[in-house]
Length: 321
Image 1 (spheres, helix red, strand yellow):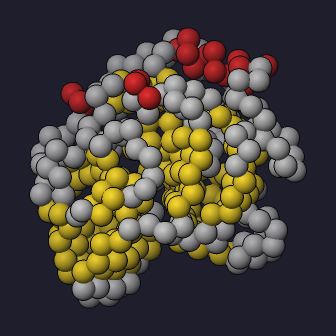
Image 2 (spheres, rainbow, N blue to C red; image 1 turned 30 degrees about the vertical axis):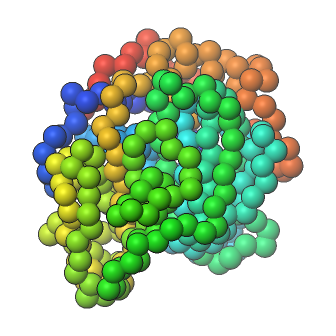
């Protein structure tokens, strides 16, 4: 999924000096963003008070939307660099195409992982015909400097490892959790897991005290470390935790996100992650005029033009409030 904002503003992110080094309970409210004709997303990262969680730099939650008589998701070809995209569904299907030639339908609780590396373009759309409901999350992972020029590639994994406990099934999307390791490629220490909880379940998840964490609520009513987290909101938890208490007041779906605090300071603008104004400016120019990002074949429609860059240089300088 793309950032389709035509008034895209830069986000200056990263740097360990802005990480909360102790356990906290910081509830993040979403910003509502229209994505195409019929999909509205709730944007949790970047947030006014919180830019990243580990290497996780962008989180959108959408649905459940009734798209029976709607086109559903329609995201034209657009570029990415310096990041990975994670497509994660609870309901519906998304058809992915990209400039490496990948063509894949992603279904609920299957991992669609695209590593843009130096440059890649892709599109996402609801197939025709498509399921009635669409519900999921789109996330980005920032690539560290040592790997941000990696060869672009796409991975699809329909069978992911799971950790189970009474009333809980945790599907490991990326990284590792309680000894279960995802097959998805990662470039920094991190974890992403989908948590399905039955009503009345009370349990504790093991955590790494060196990671910072957040929990996104997808559905139902759950308490995370005693804090009620409603669907479409996210609780930032800081670092220093060895376990996380969870309690489900109804059947509930959550996403656990975490990782080592991202050391590098980065500039994120539109669909690019770079390190300087000049790099972002060059990427925009290459998308509008050049062939660096390749061609997405088979999409029925025009590609997405880039918005105008805001005036003034973009400089990495840590978290911005």
